Amino acid sequence: MEIRTLFFATYRDIAGAEELLVTLPAGASVRDLVHELRARGTAWQAFPTDPAAAVNLNYAPLSTPLAAGDEVAFIPPVSGG
Image 1 (cartoon, rainbow, N blue to C red):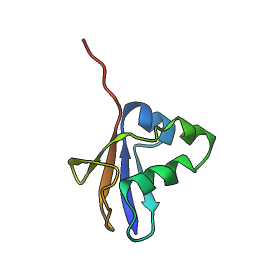
Image 2: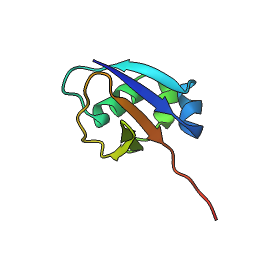
Image 3: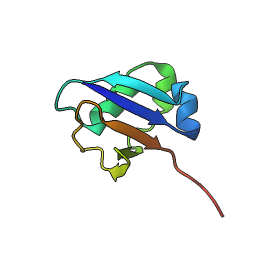
């Protein structure tokens, strides 16, 4: 199944793109998507193992199951004062 994956700020720098289509097996979760991304090579090792994620515009835990056509956005930490 194809998952539309969105990246922002520092995560976009790691991905080298704002968006990627990632193919995962049926029954995969957001955590499986993270593992797939981190397995893509050295630059991806900077991608966190436990990032904040939103599935179809709603914040979701990494255990959230995915379906074909879902959109997963990874939200980097934000600092402020």
